[in-house]
Image 1 (cartoon, rainbow, N blue to C red):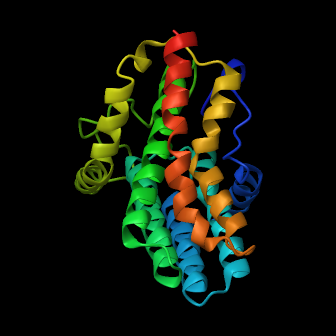
Image 2 (cartoon, one colour; image 1 turned 90 degrees about the horizontal axis):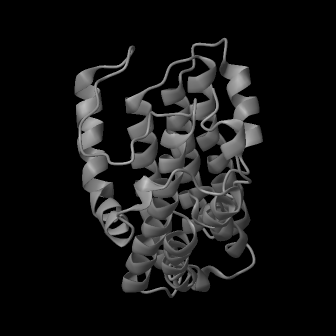
Length: 256
C-alpha cells in the first residue's frame, strides 16, 4: 500500500533511502522480523553514528547517518508488506528520530567549537523544519484517495490500538510523542492554521518542501561532517529555518 495515490506522488528529496528500505523490507517479509525490530535497528545505526562523531571518525559517521535513513524507510515498508500497520511503530519511529536529532547536535557541540546555545537553536530549527514538512505531507496523505491514514493531521487524541498491539503501549508512546513534539506542532499549526482546508498540494511544492524532510536534513549533516565543516552545521540549520516563512508564504499565497 502506497502512502499516496498516483496523482499525488512527488519527487521527495528526503526519501532517497526508499529503494534500499524497500529492498531490505522484502528480505524480511517472510521472516519473524517485525517493523519494530527494524525501528530499533535504525536507532542503533544512529547511535553508531554518534559514537563515530565522538571519536572524530566523520566519514564513518556519515555512512551510518545515511544508513539510518535507509533503514528508517524499511520499517514502514515492512509494515505495508506484512499488512501490519501500527501506532506503536509510528510513534516509536518519531520518538527515536527526535532523540537522535538532539543527540547528533549535542555530540557535534561537544566535539567542536559550537556553543550549547547554537546547538539548541539548531535543534529547534531542525524540528520546526521537519514539523512543517510532516504537517503538509500528512494533510496530503489524509486527503489522498487510498492514501495512508496512520498519521493524523492533529495528534490530540490517543488512537485506538490496532490488531497486534496493546492499548497500554499505544497510550505510553502517544504520551511521549505529544510531550516531545507538541510544542513544535502547535507553533507550525499557529503559523498556518488553515492548511488542512487545502484540497491538495501541487507536486512541485511538495518537492520543494522535501528539502525540510528528515532524510535531507541528515544528508546535509552527512555531507558536512567528512569535509571538515562541522563548525558550520549548527549555524547552517539556524539560517535554514528562515525558509519556513517562505514556504508558508507560498502556501498561503498560491495554494488554497
